[in-house]
Image (tube, rainbow, N blue to C red):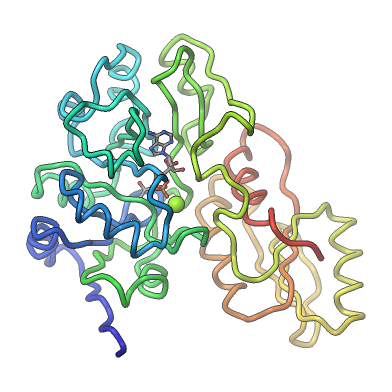
Length: 329
Ligand code: TXA
Ligand code: MG
């Protein structure tokens, strides 16, 4: 039997969204980073539905979204002073903090871990939903496990529209990449996932160096290869590699997509260029929609032109590496 498609609606559906959450249902909603798939974080059965819909392993912890920093004490304990300072400076905003979990928090939310990820999103619909609902909303990105995160309501509809009741439509996400995750539960603050808010900005506020753990140590599943990946085999390459691969693909009559800030000639319907902005913030904003556009064309290969390897491009580089981790030309 074909399942019905989710209703897509704006502010007028906030009341219904709150009712659905209170009944243990799922609501997708916009944040400034990407769309989230929300459930009542205090309801383990509702939280388990998130994992089922996303087809995500249940030991992968979720981020709990709050309306106000004063709620932190209900979700975390032994909250260090630096957490309050970061909340003050960056919330609402694209920063998730990992803290020791409050003993009342269901383990379903934290994937069995003794820590919890918390953030206040900077989006008017998300904030209205959180305020009207009153409690914490557990929400991973509203995509199937390992797939590209959604930055538009239409993306959510195509990913999981047949499995949820309601998608709140807030247009395009302003930032376009998932939040920065900073772990404050260990001895030293660590960035587990780079994002719009940089390690330097965090260090400035807390007056302490912030490090990036080595790959092996990291537990965050968002750091696994294969995350954020389009279905089309995608390869990250330097400009000269790209030209070489392009030639090879065309010789083999393959249809190719190119994601690049540069111009490349488009060839008789066999080469599709997704031209990207050359500013890292604008690039981040467009990235997931651009990958989806190329993915929809059913191409044989996507060639991703490398971006500069500097601080400003850190979050974009992180996602590009993950999106291209699995494929070879
Ligand atoms: O921007 C965002 O953070 C979006 C929007 C919807 O808020 N959410 C998001 O959620 O990206 P998700 O589930 O796709 O990614 C959450 C990341 C995962 O990599 C998870 O491992 C990590 O947060 N995480 C959550 N709780 C954690 C914990 N206790 N310890 C370590 N990592 C944790
Ligand atoms: Mg995700």
